Image (cartoon, rainbow, N blue to C red):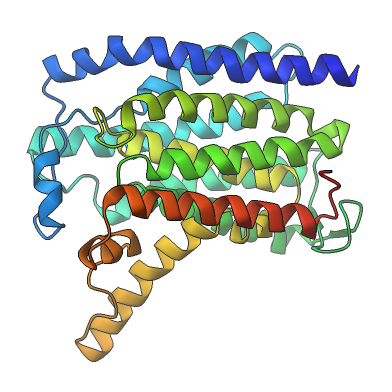
Amino acid sequence: MEFILRSTETAAFAGTFILTVIAGPIIIPLLKRLKFGQTVRNDGPATHLKKMGIPTIGGLIFIIPMTIVSLILAPGHPGMIPVLLVTLGYAAIGFADDMIKVVKKNSDGLSPKQKSFGLLLVSAAFAFYTAYHPAIGTGMILPFLGVDAVVELPVLLYIPLVIIVMYLITNSVNMTDGVDGLAAGVTLIVAVFFTIVAMMKPEWDSVKMICGITAGGCLGFLVFNIYPARVFMGDTGSLALGGVVGAAAVLMKMPWMLLVAGAIYAVESLSVFIQVVSYKLRGRRVFKMAPIHHHFELSGWKETKVVGVFWLITIILCLVGLAMLRYDIF
């Protein structure tokens, strides 16, 4: 049975990867014909000006295959459907944001209030779903003690916690998407990590499948998004990916793991927070530019070096995460 499950998971990964690679040459020319070009922020690194006009909203390239494969496998893994709905909900918000940017021809999409309202609405729906689902509940796994060390949280604490986690992770993945191949590559690694972790318990089979599907989509997208990128995922893709990894962590009762395996997301988001607070309180910037990947670019690092280092850090932190769960990988 274990061999069959792992074979199905491998097939889901491979199938999504193949469909994504096929979707790229179809969707990218379509985005070009529709003039869905990237708008580069005026205060960004000068080297990014050459990215102006590269097709955006490319998240559709992996979201559509992920949806197709998930629906095909859903009868055997119905637990994937809530994650898929959350993913598509965030993707819809990102799509609206991207479309406004394309129409206005500037980097301003939805207003912060509009975007936050949409993200919080989807996050709240997922939080209530998990809290009151009899097979999920409000339990949280404690770090370092193994996957059976679960503490039950009061509903009034659990729901706000999940809302905050989902809201923050989607925004953080969104901020990570600023250098060719960075968000897709980091999420590929995190998705593979969650796929491995989800093998620890049979009740996490649906999480295992959706994370394997996500990994396949990210790998396929990197074919077109690795430096020099031919397409960008836009908020459509980054918010969707944030939804998947956030939902996976919540369903496995370990949202804290996002601070370990997904530490790059957290650092990217934290750098923006520090930059804004420092400028408002002291009138001075801590970083040359935020998110922090731009700081390294302006410090002389090439995009490929930034991406390579961040990928390597993520791999190391995922191994740390496995050790924290006392997972025997040898």
